[in-house]
Image (tube, rainbow, N blue to C red; front, top):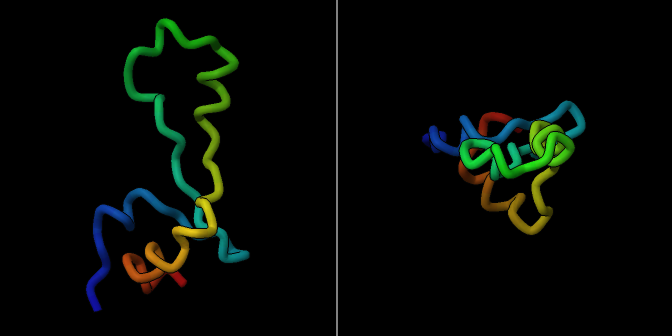
Length: 63
């Protein structure tokens, strides 16, 4: 079974099995965003549980 390389680069699996992803909105147009907003966009966020089955199929060897 092949790993989807684009998914492997975007998602990280924690030791407890949570799937983490990077928040959007941090690549450009940063001048208008506040420091607080940009700081919070740095943090990774847990993936919505409804997407878990799809992502597990894309990156089977990370589990």
